[in-house]
Length: 234
View: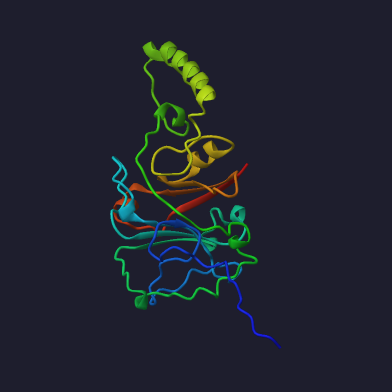
């Protein structure tokens, strides 16, 4: 028998309270880890946001402190609209003392969880950008006066050509703003309750997009217990 040093490249190089995709979450010791209600397995962290990193956005009452987390069970397509298979947690106060936190996450399995699909870890940063309402008006009731109907039609044709030429409808990942419409996303936006909280396309699995919606009153009260989740795979 000969001793050797095992190389483990599966650790999370980022801090527990950092904004990130994947990796190990910020979780106080007195909090029960989110469990997939169908499989009974621990749900890996999909994305974590340190709210202090997010610049204020007009009309979007996002908390300016704390940590917001999105957990997801296996098979994202089965998790949408199934609260037992996803969880959103918010911690208003943050401790940077690791003695207060769970630091051993070896109980999270790779096989049979979303880590089987999304095993990468990377940091997140945020900046303010702008959405054009006209491209995202589907799902909203827009009353156009009769005298402007022809002008509206002309503008609609122009913006579609502009959109096609510059791909302005694909703005990617965002907190708040309007939903980017493609595939069957317009159907999702029409039936979802509330406004867009998070739109996220996984950077290492192109075509896999995650949508989370929340009602205004709940967002204002930092109540993330009734967030709706939808998944689109193109």
